[in-house]
Length: 252
Image 1 (cartoon, helix red, strand yellow):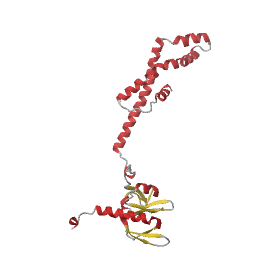
Image 2: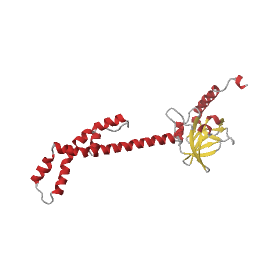
Image 3: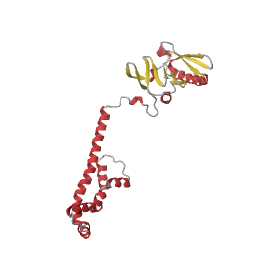
Image 4: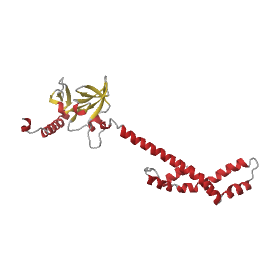
């Protein structure tokens, strides 16, 4: 209890587990060990008095022998030994457990890296792979190979050359994590891959039809309000593709 109060008072929240820092920490908590006798002596002596003198209790004898008489230099150093053993024993035992746990965690991290670490994009990076599931099981798919992503009955799917896969990410999450130069959200429940767009044309009722370069020449619709942004993104995407084309001499 005293150690916990002392930690709160001194704002000791974290300790880097190095020999130098541990030594400083144990010196820092030394005052707790030195004053523990004065705080707990009345309690332990009262229990001792009740057990030894039962049933002949005398208040004057209790105060003289068991309270005032026990506050002496001799008894202080006698009790200081078990106090130091109990106090530092519990502290060092806790530190040893923390050190062993830290080593086990480091060992597990080195031996078994997270296989899905790349599925969570780092700050400044875009999503590259997704975990998908179909009737045959689970797999990892590259997002750049997907034709589009869609929502159906509150479930989310990735349409891939190898099939339709159920995914856990929502349309809003995908819109935030996918490369905006490669993917475009045509409507609330659909995000298409611009690299698979074959053509687009006016359809009906202010909607446009987008034909995709898929084995079945699939089509999806888009509201007129998204048309201009869609054109701008197609232009930027086409310009990027031209930048990466090799010189004509190399093609020949």
